[in-house]
Image (cartoon, rainbow, N blue to C red):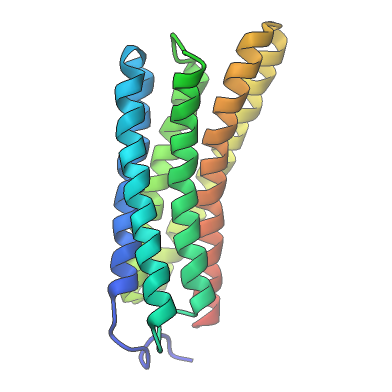
Length: 208
């Protein structure tokens, strides 16, 4: 196959992907701000909740259009998978923010800041790659973005493992419970980014 030459020009699904990507970038940026300004955590939590609601609206639009569409630019299961992963990324960011407020965190750990820094970089790469997917002309650039997302996930895993090790070594049970859950949500968001990259790579193979 030569690619997308016979696929209809309906770009609305790609516009939804891009919109969701922007929401995720904003949510990860707000989470970074929360960790730097922990005294105002509730304000940032509310902002992320609004972004998560926006993300939910986008996925509802995608599913509604998918249910009504006769011909789609990608296979229906790929559209569902991409949209769901984007929604999951935002959900995990919100889950981390909710736990920071719930556990009344007074000071962010260096590890949490590093994890969210990596997450933000990964989310930006996701936003870039779903934007590239619309034209599908530069498959090499798409693959390189997917490789970078995988690299960032591996870097995040390393920070996550080291952070957990430090928590157990510290011996403070409450700190362990509190931060273990927060770290897990951030790490899961990075995993969702990697899952999305894997889906895009499989789409490229399918249409090569």
